[in-house]
Length: 423
Ligand SMILES: Nc1ncnc2c1ncn2[C@@H]1O[C@H](COP(=O)(O)OP(=O)(O)OP(=O)(O)O)[C@@H](O)[C@H]1O
Ligand SMILES: [Mg+2]
Image (cartoon, rainbow, N blue to C red):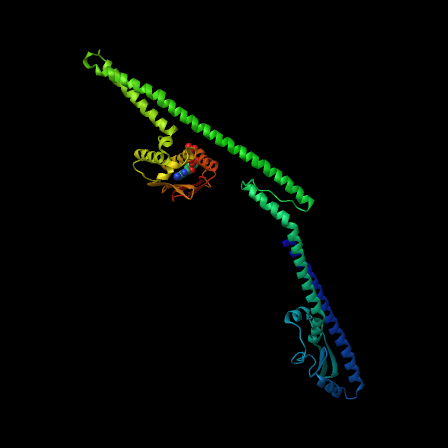
């Protein structure tokens, strides 16, 4: 559109230039012709008169004629004083006069007597005014034509570009992952064909996205189920066996002095190793399945998790704010929220060197809002490539149909915010 406007403006400019150029040429030719004609007439009149100087004086008293002035001067090289302008001239606008006025005005000198000359000077003002009268209508017509053409072109282009704009907007939506968008039918067959192809592509992408989502959901569910099973096995099998080993060792030690030399020490060592393995196993179980999540719900599980992290990071102040109603959050959602807080907390402690971390989880108008805010080093998301942790968070929240926002700036801490619908 801009190019078309520019082209039309260039055509208008050329037409205006041509009109003004013609006007300038007409003014110049008219000046030349007037000076030549007046010169011949004045010359004839003076020559025929016996008193040439007297005739010249009489003629000079006429002063200003159409397009020219007559003046009698006394010395050969002198110029007439005051130039030649008609005060009654109707006048043209200054810009038009400036563009059409000839650069050098013609003049003619006729020697009347040895020390007197008759000077005929050109006055272009009348001619310029006439040229303006002739030209202004044409110029106005050109401007009106230009504006009307621009209006028509804009309207036609606007209509013709509607499908292009809609296709462009639809492609932008696809670029942002909105595969549900579809284009309407267009009257122009070419655009209609493109719309049909576009809709076909969007439908294929939509189906692929759904399938992808389903698979991711499935794999996360399997992962959590598997972790759950391993935690239960660890508890039921390894935990029980370790408890039995520790009980046996305690039984041996209970015999006291009746033990052969060295047996008591060995039993003590067995009990100590079994105790360490038991502690490690409990830690692994906690990581595999948050304790209390299934029985007590999200709030209790998060409170317990934050308290446990606080015990191992005494130099950082951790503050958890939840609410009782979180107990009603379904476990399928709760496990993802728990993992999100777990990873956000780990990241803050591992990368951020914060002095304080605030964790807030609340329910508001059927939406679960999670905030993990630290006052640590922060990071530049443009420079920092997301690892498994951040992309895992995004994936979990996406599967829940929510939105994840990661705000972080160097030296200004990090804020992780998730907004999840519960319906
Ligand atoms: N709270 C935070 N404070 C400072 N930097 C952070 C924070 N959270 C994330 N980062 C930066 O973002 C990067 C990506 O984090 P992400 O959790 O995705 O990966 P990671 O923690 O490096 O590894 P992992 O895959 O084990 O989680 C981190 O390496 C770290 O540089
Ligand atoms: Mg991480």
